[in-house]
Length: 334
Image 1: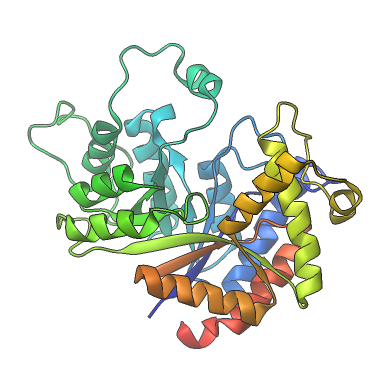
Image 2: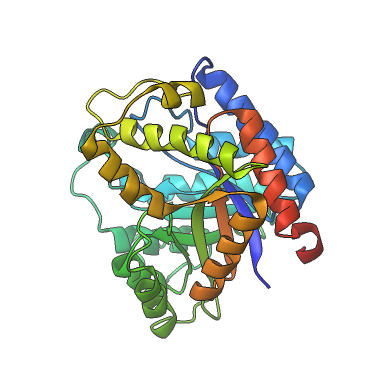
């Protein structure tokens, strides 16, 4: 049976600010818990002025304190920016305070080189991504006798461990997840083309490990949902403009309002980009979007679907996940 999750970027809506964006994320997590969603994840974005979610571990602690039983996770920690030892200790602290509720989603961000440079400016030779993941496993749950830091313990010492997921958009990440014996979260919202091949490669080459005995697949999707198709289309136009803005040379420090998007014209090049981006999202009424999500999950044979309700307005985001929870019959499924 497929289970459903929410991932929030903490968008800064036009006319609002970063503080309120983070507070809205908190309310969304509380709402998702009441609606029956299994997990609530938050993202890590740097140098994107319209998103407040830059430090998932910090936000996760607040969200875990603000909720009771929903799993809280990172979607994800961009590992090339950090020390695996420090990431392991951050998540050990989270898990110690909220046992069996913490997810560590690991990613390899293609974001600004300047960000990675600032994160690693004083460091020497960088580790490979695969080595970093092996180190995380060593420090969190699978100490190896021959590891170069075999005499070093990630603190605190606790009885439970966070659930680990590898995020990706292609066969490279799928191969790593399979080789490492990790659960795999495919970003259908990023690159839907090639997704079936990546997930198939993951399943066919999965190597059982102490982390996971058999393959486990999650897909993530953008969902623009409203009571009517017309309202959903209006929200989608604002989403179109936001996606265009984050790729521009001077993006605004906010997620554009629906009125802003409707009042703006688009060039021929922008309309072509919008047409391409629309392939990355499901738009419409709750019943329509729920059917598209179910169909996509079935195609991937996914165990879980993570829904990203990245639309303008905190009320619209809350309403959207509530409408989907009902259309997907999540309470019954849970």
